[in-house]
Image 1 (cartoon, chains in turn yellow, orange):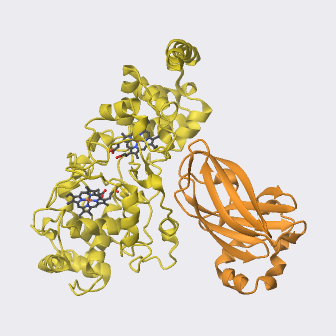
Image 2 (image 1 turned 90 degrees about the horizontal axis):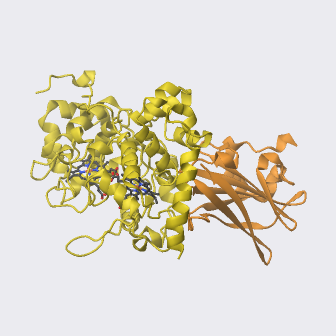
Image 3 (image 1 turned 180 degrees about the vertical axis):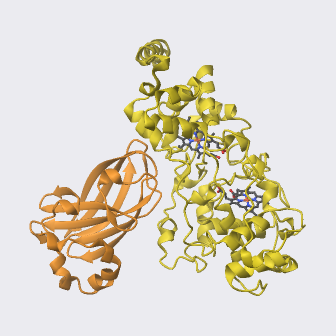
Length: 404
Length: 151
């Protein structure tokens, strides 16, 4: 009964209301209400103010950034000398690999996340198993399924090239030494320092946002109407911004949107529940002695973590910037295109969501036109031009020897 | 009245002192609470004033609690013009519409003279949040709640 009522009475009514309340297409700024504009404003400005990682004493250090850059592209860190960070995190793809699930020394279970703007995150990994960028960068080096590296191999590499050896000494004030238990942490901190410099370019959305805040109606109207309609849907009926909030379009926390978490051949990916366990067992978390922030102020999130039943099957809310480059989507790469993602939200299976979990997601039942609008908006969150190769950070003067 | 205002910058330094000799800090008692103590809630004779504090110890209005950012609270318990002997036992927050709470477990530090500091809260979504204070006063357990809108 309610279904019929809904379908035959409410829908046309809503349509009429919506149609009559939408101002003329050319109305520019007036198209968005003051409340909508305030909400749009919260998704900027872009770029975000740069952050220094107080837990990483070489954050922002030029020698470390140069060393980190070099090591990120260095396949000889891996046991088979053939897998670099950049094998999976490819610059031209927004630091993703285009695969559903990553392939390192062994096939992985999760989708490779892009690394743009990673310096702004609170949690790292789909399950937030890391609370800092350097321990998330150490994991792949050591993980036997990804690179399977170790300290001896790393030191051999650092010593084999004057440029690497020199930048390591400049950054850490000592020679690389395999007996130094800090060695791999230092290497990871250098790679982290470089990753902190990865900021994605500003987008159509950012330009639209600025035009709205300036009150520049002409500039607003120059953006495709589909994009603007999609934005309104994103903020309004879609309720997408509840989780995909702020300039990154992520609140940095975790959610369950009903993406199946079964892993072949059998088993499940426990998501955040496993992530919290992993995090607390990790000697490289911010409660440990490798945190360079003596005040411990940067460990608030870790110190106050509260495990909940609902964490089972929750995954990190991904940023929605640069989606154009980072397909396929979701923690298991199970959705190939943005159209698939929008269909997922449109037809979401409420039975798959935790009963004690979020009460936000309902099947949106979007029309074809609405889906297209929402996709147009999601596409507006990627760089306007093709991605450029990352800028090579300069060698520090003391190590300025020509690169081979 | 103004001179007893708390200097937030010295919290950290004062904390051990206060914990050691709560009574010696009585000069800091702030009862009845005034505007600077934040939002006032009452239950019978008990008055509870709470105020969000951001990183760097900046006190702000509840409407300025950041979305998805950690913050702390200062809480003052009073009965009339004297500090209450009641104890703040628990602080929690939920989103009634979403039926979920926070992802973080706040911790309460007693500073003496009815004053408490609660660390580690975070509202990770925009919308209505309900903060609940559980106060033990003698045999009684009182629950005081306050709604805040986060955007």
